[in-house]
Image (tube, rainbow, N blue to C red):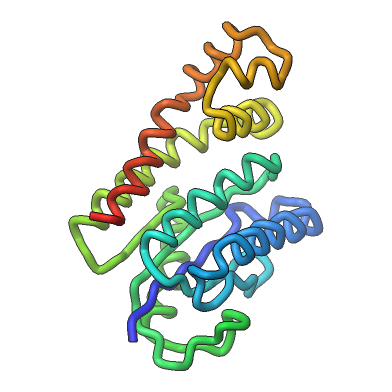
Length: 209
């Protein structure tokens, strides 16, 4: 049986404060497992300290989870970047719906190999849904998404970006942050929030086609 297998690891984890890294990483998985419990077959489970794996019900939920993790990291000002692989692959054993352990199959092996191979590519996202056309659009879209997001700076940009994502109006954000409207408007433009929202919309839409 084929399933949507999601794996992720922390980029450059060895250079991080290990205690803080684990705390932040756990918060990410706990947040997703609670919010998307109805869309997850096997919960996101930290396996090797700086990696997690889980089984998701469908491609649409997988995309939503990836985007939500990224925004959760920004909202909480976490100093971590994650690398993700999603493979629609075969699992030979029974799916463990309590914890993503003790499962075997070609899909799991392929996902782990792809995640390891990505370490030399610089890409943080790879989706293999077994649909070549859809894969092409999704992966190119995530390349654009990564180009925008990875240019943002923790501490300097994350609070403003989080507010712009939440309130969707620079005028409201200027009031919330007690900043000049013109300053927030300029920062919104320089941070490419319009392009960010557009590429998110593309990613949400392509899975439904």
